[in-house]
Length: 105
Image (cartoon, rainbow, N blue to C red):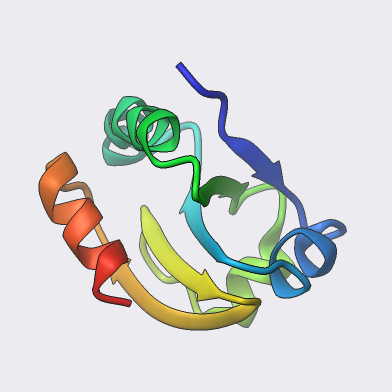
C-alpha cells in the first residue's frame, strides 16, 4: 500500500500551492480515531488513483497551515486543483463517498 506524502508548514507552499493537478490534503492527528480509521482508505485510494496526490498534515505539529485553512475539527480534507483550494469536507466516511467528494471538486 502507498505511503501518504507528509506535508509540513515548511513544505506546504512547494508541495501543495505550487503543485499541478489534484492534491487532497488530510488534516489529521495521531490521537484522532476517525483519522486513524481513514488512513487505510486513503492509502488504498492513493494506490488506485496515481493521478492524484493524497497527502497528510499533522495539525499538532503544523498549526500554521491548519489555522490558515480554519481547521476546527479533524479529519478535514481540502482538495487543491493546481495549487488552489477547490473543496473541503470533514469526517470519516466510506471510500466511495470520499472519492465522490474529491471528484466533485
